[in-house]
Length: 553
Picture 1 (spheres, one colour):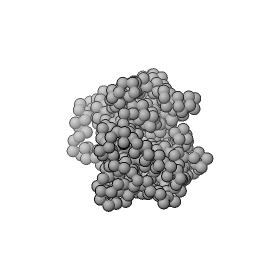
Picture 2 (tube, one colour):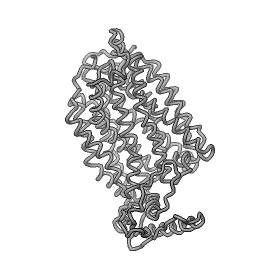
Picture 3 (spheres, rainbow, N blue to C red):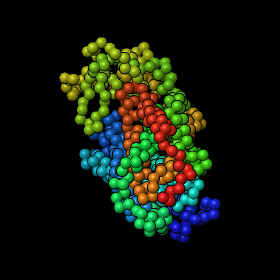
Picture 4 (tube, rainbow, N blue to C red):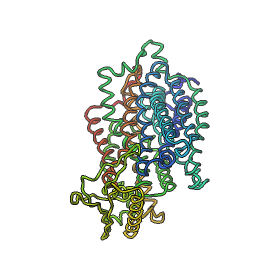
């Protein structure tokens, strides 16, 4: 069965050839997303293993930045591999991308840690993340274009929605493998060395993926375009011309940017929020996210199918609008149901830092060299590390910061000018007193498993993923239909990967830093909400509906 015959069936019936194209493209993409998201799922452990030379808060932010580095280069991968795909074909390009992705992931599994080789460890890790990002930049556009160009008219939303499930299924698979390893080895062994197993498994998945993709033929529309001599010799240059460049910018701001922040907000930031802000243990948090993904994943297909009936644009923009309107109540609900002790303690004994504003810094130190010695910084860092929401209230200029928790005050200290021994002594005494005060006020060190309302928490997580399915299910068909065949791979890949790589990929880092800077555990939500609202406005005003377009041009 070749790819050309797979494109023809009466009334758009799903033939054996169509199923083969969808399965082969989707399965390989699942494995590639699995490779990419292993890092995100294990960000906390990665921080300990590869960024142990800095303090805990900075280490976690640095680990998130390394995660985001893979996203930062995705547009460059989209430009290079997209151009390659428009010139030599869709099939061969995404064979190359999956090999790069699989090998990079496998090497992470054998990479020595910071404790073994020092600074070289995080440097090599970031290089591998960059390689993964470049590969993924070429993967998605190739798979989506390949499936869409096989789909009959009126079925593109349904057919490409199977590709849209792959990112969530890849994340789901990574969570399942991680959970299996945790349960089999125990948390201590898993965090010491067992975390490497999911990365090493990728070599098996790579072999399967390459074998499957070698069975495919080239896209029929690409073959037709080449036979008619209508292909582009320089797809990237042609994509950057006048009207097409304007369209790519509108697609970025009016479709993919909002889709990206809703995707990462609903699946990744929710996981970070559970583990970092609410102190839910990793196994429980992963199980909850995995269950939400399993329950919501069929809706990718539902919304892809529905977009063939009522249009892509209105479903995507509705998902962005719903997320923007409901994110605050949903995440506050997660606090209420997943760790009510934090909510109760905050209501009964709120943490307030009284400090001279001039002494408070934005504590972001990606290289771990800056020392924060002011009492305000010391107080704020201690609370942020403990996951305690707090408010900073101005105090007299030059005064030493103090933390007020209920009716008890804990005075911080100014470390400037103190010897190392004095700093250690003051820090130990301050940390001990703060911990005792927080415990007395009811602030938990970790979420109480017996108090987690599993059904309610799972429902809220499911709603977040439903928003993901709304914005993501129809997006592949929408992007394919907006651009002509000769430059489609390049033109759709660039706004998709800038949106997802930059707007979405940096969401955890930006949101976490905003929370650490303000003490407000919900403040980071303003970033995805703002981007989602921008997309609703731009997309609503400037982008057209495409469901009935002819893509053979």
